[in-house]
Image 1 (cartoon, rainbow, N blue to C red):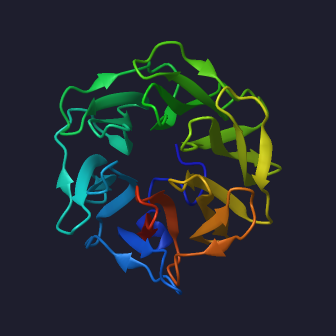
Image 2: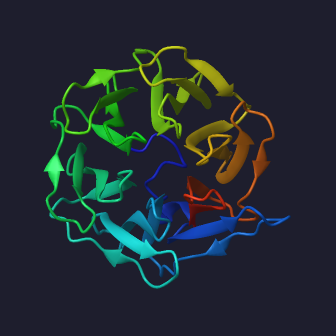
Image 3: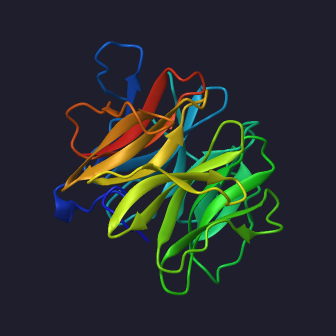
Length: 285
């Protein structure tokens, strides 16, 4: 399902990358330097982290070997090895915490949206398998879930449904374009997302009902995977430049763009700590 080099699925070994680790950046430092959180061996990939509301735990996708299915893991922010969640759904990718920290939403099986308890139990599919889905994220009040759904022509739209799977409705409908990577603003009023137009991804924002869509950032590169800071003043994102990618931060109006992933060459999928002091992201190596 991958649509770009910085998508959640890690690059293959054919691209020269044999593992993927999580890194953290402390933003208060004058010159932030990424610190590695995981210690993946060859063929092991840890990716697409999501920070728990209490800041203690990260949920993430992972593969224990080249040909293994992707599973869900949790990792203590204080250290240690990732622990696999025993969900019965495989593959399972791109987890996102509910605002109360009790459940996770994720993409599982052949591309459906699922929810489950934080320990991996009581998984339940929220939509059918007739169309593929690739990301799903909770609204800040826990009442809705934004997700992507593939169109018949292979492009992607953003949809929103109630947290129990009822009342699904498209909030982008652009037959000739793709919209992906929805990210709720902290107040729940807006959704930032990436749109592919003219062969390039840019960052946009809209009201949560799909109205008032406008551009946040259109550069000469591919910009995607937006993530709001907890105070709503900044947005982290992934920028692709040729065969490399890096994590950047900008103000919510698109100004003040700066890189934070240092010399790492394929960084993507940023997520903010609940206190706004740190950003965790993936880097393939």
